[in-house]
Image 1 (cartoon, rainbow, N blue to C red):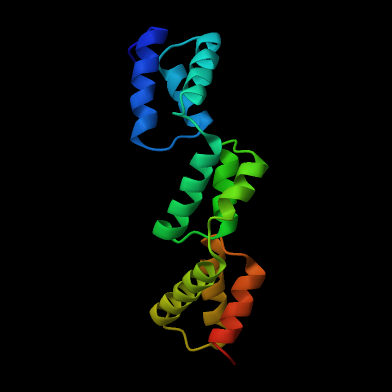
Image 2 (image 1 turned 45 degrees about the horizontal axis):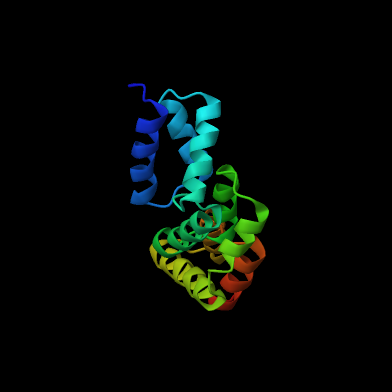
Amino acid sequence: MKKYTPTQALEKIRHYCAYQERSHLEVRNKLYEYGLYSSDVDEILMQLITDGFLNEERFAKSFAGGKFRVKKWGKIKIVNHLEAHDISKNCIRTALKEIDNDDYLKTLRSIIEQKNDSIEEENLFVKRDKISKYAIQKGFEPDLVWKTIKEMIPN
């Protein structure tokens, strides 16, 4: 990997941040890949934050909204991934507020419906179990999943 001077790295990392929202962790790791020392990395991070290239809350909102709309992830999976990016609890709470409750339930219902249509299983209990495992794996809250399944696929 090519080593960069702090000035070159700052220029390069600005393009990296301008392309899409990034977490502090992603940017920090990228700067270390450029062969910089931790003092330079900290300085560049501060510069990026000051210049508005890096914003933890903006990243969290964009991440949560995108993963929910595009990949149809539930809140649990979104929170776990944001925590893996070292995002603060406060920013995570703010990001989850971006997800509309009605849209959240509609998405869960559509996931359950699609899975229900795709499973060829005679035993209702086995079928419901497979559907619930799928929805829970997508990051939806187990109690909400079961409540919705029981409403949509009654005995």
